[in-house]
Amino acid sequence: MTEQDFLVKMKEILDNEDVTMDTALADIEEWDSVSVVGYVAMANATCGKRPIAEQIRGCASIRDLYGLLGA
Image (tube, rainbow, N blue to C red; front, side, top):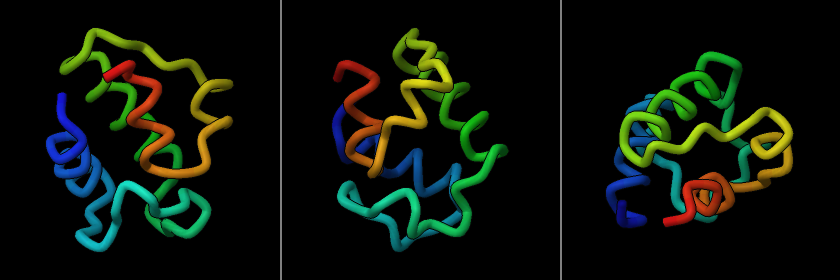
């Protein structure tokens, strides 16, 4: 999955068109438990990855979440 494809999917999950790869997760009001579940489901469906809570908590930005996918 390309960064652009990932970003499109994250914008859908977050229902926020303003996020970029460098947006800090702490600055995204929509980044909540429901969004985390959406991210994990997307990661599993598109990349066969299942990031765990510790890995996700260690992420500071959208780019960090992308990095968990090993893309």
